[in-house]
Length: 336
View 1 (tube, rainbow, N blue to C red):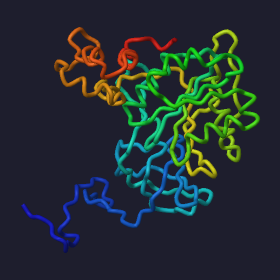
View 2: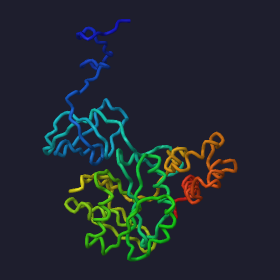
View 3: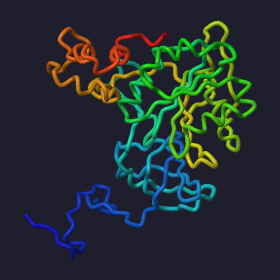
View 4: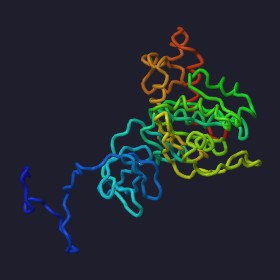
């Protein structure tokens, strides 16, 4: 078998037969060493809006990438027309490795996972304290997805003027999750915005929450120079809001050097893709206690070594309860 060296000519390259009679195909692809680096800001029907240096460039995925898709937050390499002018189109030829991935499925029986955001540092889970009522099981599912994907969670509670945060804080206190409590008046005055911004400095933060909780209102307050769609209302019968965001979009935070990724409102958050063994990594005080667990331990069975670990005083019992609640969330319905 002949091997190709550094100095090849056209006769050395094997080509596939082409019945159409046009230029023969070859398996050798260009390396695009002069490609420019960019970040995906949003995706809409196969067109990707990217930031290249200080220019916003519209691009499409190159054919050689095959089924590999780029999502918001991806670091990509682009070639072609990078001027950013109207009616120009560049090509994405490479997608860099991801440091974190926020994924979800439509439900727990759906094998097809959807990557929502790549390379985010933290996940801001926005929930209203009333109108609509909090859905703890949906919050739990978002927490599991954050722990599984390598994101640090942040709990943002809105509409504290309608209900106190005590019950919700008691439910998640053992997880040591940073949180911010806001009211509508504080959002209008800007006081709440400053408190939220303190958690976003220099980070890429994905915002998630079910419809009507005020997520897009908060994003608009954080990035007033690039407001998203108008906010929706909460249905008085169903207690749920109307989607006002239809696609994920990364927006730069002025002054603090971070990014906010606004995502569409959630109706459900499937976890079919999650490996339960990764969830416990978010509980470093419990991880050493798993050394005595039987093989493939679910950490919620009679022989689990974590019970003895907690009994011996190595960890707070509330932490073990929180872990088991999160591990069991896949078996629970999302309607709560």
